[in-house]
Length: 124
Image (cartoon, rainbow, N blue to C red):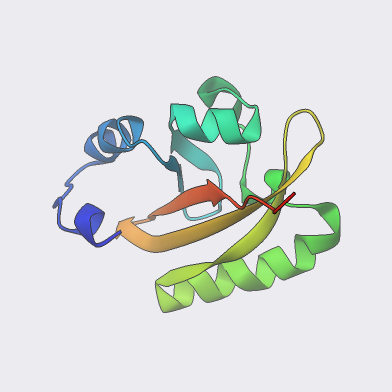
């Protein structure tokens, strides 16, 4: 995340280009949590294409319904504090539940927030 912050990105388009080339799942959301940019690893993780995610889905669409209130609290805290990390459960397009570790930075550009995600593998 520190490397990303040092990029001195000056526009949403530059941020989208940067995210597209990352090898880790990355999702950019606007101030209300709607995704505005994602990359191929995020599509592989969620099962949704960038076209399905961007400007159509939000943070709340991927979190489990039982976590919706918790998501609201986490979102407000994230925007206020400016960064967040942890593990959350997401639902994929196929309905599978996956645990992901995330690190997020709010207002990387004004009103745009980024999350980097990695699936948590459970031992077999």
